[in-house]
Amino acid sequence: MGKVPKIRTRGERVCAFIEAHCIVPEGKLVGHRMKLAPFQVRFILEVYDNPAGTRRAYLSIGRKNAKTALIAALLLAHLVGPEARLNSELASGARSKKQAAQVFRYASKMASMSPTLCDLVKATPSQKILVGLPRNVTYNALAAEASTEIGGSPVLAIIDEIGQIKGPLDDFVDAMETSQGAHDDPLLIAISTQARNDTDMFSLWLDDALDEDGNQKDPRIVCHLYTAPDGCELDDPAAWEAANPAIDLFRSRQDVIDQAKLALRMPSKENTFRNLTLNQRVSTASPYVSKIVWKENGRAPPLMIDPDRDVFGGLDLSARFDLTALVLIQELADLPGVWGVWAFFWTPLEALAERARRDKVGYEQWVADGFLRTTPGKSVDYDHVAEEIAEIVEGLKLVHIAYDRWRMDVMIKAIDRLEGGPVIPLVPFGQGFKDMAPALDDLEADLLNARIAHGMNPVMTMCAAGAVVTMNTTGDRKLDKSKASGRIDGMVALAMARGAATKAPLEEPSVYLTRGVLSVEV
Image (cartoon, rainbow, N blue to C red):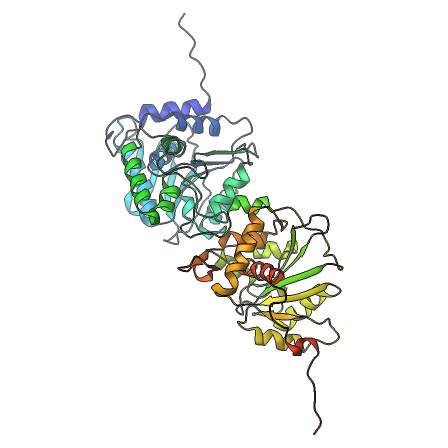
């Protein structure tokens, strides 16, 4: 009797199908059977042989590591291979029509060049649709910019280059996710380089999937992240290899060398090289505080502000439809030199969902969790804000609140209209280099030495992630809202509060806020 063939696992069957039937359609290996790299095999086996059952799978690697080839091969495995299900639907999603078409073309050519698959796959190029004839499986290539309607319910959805999405919310991705709701065991795969910022969607997905040691949190989420170490040198071959597992296989080492040399010669290219080639989470802007440093200061301040110790504040008013921020700080009694931070934010209640979509942040959830306050109406109600500020500072040993002069005349009038409330000592704080530079220097020193306790307030964390600085010729810095990647109102208020604590008193508070208006009889 002959040997009984060994029963393969799902993952092994997928790998065997790809290497036996998928043909490389482009590049220097065109016409050859696809040979999976070790990192691709590991990813496939963990996704398909997961005892818990994989619901979501993320693969993050540097550019030019054959992401499109792997996506196309997996699509064919579900279209006409071992994962094909009778009358099922598949979908891939990309940001642009060109990117979506690239995945379709690659899969279509891969099938048409294969002697065993060419008669099993029907392509409709005008609609970017492939049909696996044996089991009537349909695949659609979808693009966000084309406003493509996501009909049906794909059992497999693959998102290409999700790292390009700015912010934590995206209607197109939401639609792809919810479209899979009819299945008990759908699979969503995201293959991409990293996003640039901590608050971007793919960054949040990766952080949700992996703990600080790189271990997977949820057994149903498979996450493989290939990235160079933080702070690595641009010309470090070990860093290149950490982010590019296909280097010397089908990722050109010489191309990486050339890009590294260019980044070393031209500092403006460094962050792009780090993001796309080293697969690091690096913004092209110059951030004020890093994610690591911000987390190191994430201890929670006391629940209540000590009424017997000095309190300093910073107030950054918003345009009518944005965030207004008040940040209070106080040196903690049990931790000398450490500043507790209490942040308060306001935004109009009406059109909240619309602004959440526009800014791509979770305003509605923050309101529900108590981190964000609302004012009635469609625009910020300064009378409402003034009343709540009075309630917040009631009974506190408030030295003063530093403020940006922009629109402060409106707020001062709102404070003047308060009856029976506490005195709110206000002092102006310039937003230019003169006042901001020393405040930022002091705040930076506190952050670097873990002398801030902000409690990881999510609205404040969003502001910290988006805060960028501009520098003048003498090295002085100020926060730059025009270059920020998101709302930074909380960081502006924190910087002003820290500056107020250093230079107390900055200026004499307005007499109208300390003694009221004098009337003179004639």
